[in-house]
Length: 491
Image 1 (tube, one colour):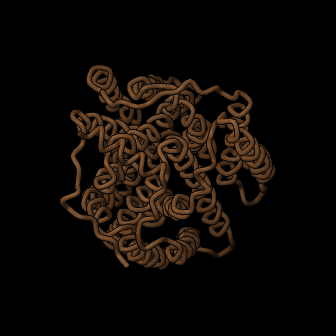
Image 2 (image 1 turned 90 degrees about the vertical axis):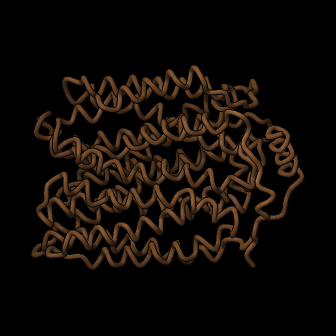
Image 3 (image 1 turned 45 degrees about the horizontal axis):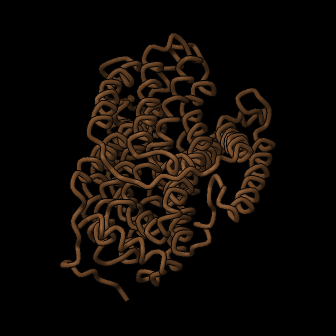
């Protein structure tokens, strides 16, 4: 049964909220876009900085690594800081890191700049989600989250396209110099006009949890990203030994972190409150959205390689191939959000998963003589499936939580997405590398094998949609109180 919302019940946003949300969405888009700009720039960086490809890939992996370390602390940070303070910290770090990258004389300063950039990005994404949940009435959350999906889904897809355009006309440093003024203007605008009220509390910081999260998530992501740089003939990861011990150690430390958080939840001192994962209507959409995020990175990682190495096209073409799909995702964001407000999650996610599954299996059939227009068409179809997937799943998951768990739910979601990005990168690159290294295999064999894995993953996502509820979950007393508070703020 599909639940339809009453259009007359749609409530307005508080005064000034639309401007504040627009500033947060725009800033987050610029920051998340920088997560994937290095995918196309790696050949230029290898030549200019005189480094190997295994070293250069850490400019992308280091970004993911930092995100995975910092995001778990944002649940605590957003409870202690006002929206304006958190925004200033996020945009200030991002702008400083961008300036360092633009002027970097070598690889080490460039990597340091990417780490500082990622620290700001790690704060901004949960801040955006928490702000939406704090001020947007339930009747309009789908519509607003539809716009936010531009940040969560379009920006990673648009990063390679933007980088390809800049690299074709200017040097790689301009990928940062062109962004720096935007970051500084956003920082000034936020300090002057960002007025989104939120409730702060002086919760105690568990230093052991911070250190444990930093070591656990950085070790796990390091192992995952290092495995993507493994030489199949030596089993060495970027010359530093096998990656699997790091993965095992990271997984064990993450388990220790989880156990500690469960213990600290009893006294309200958890760095990351995992009670959100016990809410079924949060955990099921969370798992499906994370799997979809891995599918997105299959295109982000594999298509530039396929276009440049297999089809023999330049970096500009590789970037432009994914641009139409990114534009489609951006255009579909708001209408998909409105459709979610009216029809609910299953009416959108089930057909979206079918489309995602079919497009990825079609990618697996591409060869060395496939036309570029077919690649563009398949990527557009895949983007439509992802657009219909992300907004309903993320909105449904976060809306199922009481206000006290909003910041933690956002942090968990973002942490899982970063782990999915790292795991997806490792999985697809490793499969592609190992399969291509087999004797007598053509160049496209590795890409095809990696897409087969991505398509199999999308098939599991399709099967998992059966677990979604067809209508909103029953209202709890705490959620009902949250809704009354939202109505009071909207007048």
